[in-house]
Length: 283
Ligand code: G3H
Ligand code: ZN
Image (tube, rainbow, N blue to C red):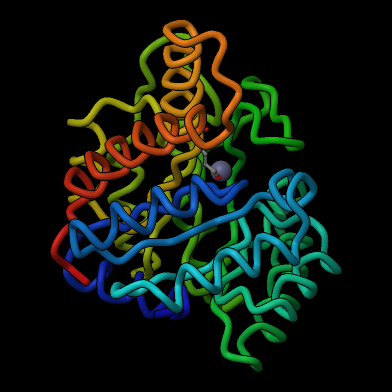
């Protein structure tokens, strides 16, 4: 069933676990996510970035997401990831997304508050929940590129002010993760996660979570992370499996045969993540 993001994340916040938010660009990814969630009885968030919407079209992603959610036996939210464009956020709401992210992290605090507040007012009026970002997460996420030197960690007191003023439902924080493939091992600032959670007391979101060691994810969840974004790990699983298949069977020309192993490989990764995040069995 299709539910709002806050319905899923409120339970995670209360019961101290995290829900995976997996990036979708095509039907195989959507199916892999829903099958994994049903097999493990886990709530789940399907999310599309602006790059994903540009690739597939908002109508296709919305239709795929809604059909998948309505058919699913577990709660599913359909979320816009890293929305930086006001009109596109409105378009997603009109097309039936049940959660949106307004990413105003490129602006100064006052402007980030103003644009987030505007989106929250409109989204809440039509029953849609909102994620915002405070601090700057480094790395590359589709069309958003943040140089590592420009990445800045979230300040707990600023986070409190931000949440009080905007009334945002869940907050993405910068605590040492980055988008894309890591060059070295990421070092998370656990004290900062704890301090932010104590200050804001709402669900917290960890971006750039692919490639973060399992023990660091477990600790981050125990300190208050409730939504964990995964894109890169799925891309790797998908393409590795397809490359492998074509190496073994280079003359195969059937897209179903070629994409099938990609889908299965993503499903296995998603199931591992759901167990790790603690969302398995929580639907
Ligand atoms: O918003 C999407 C995620 O933050 C993607 O992070 O590149 O580590 O998978 P990732
Ligand atoms: Zn992200």
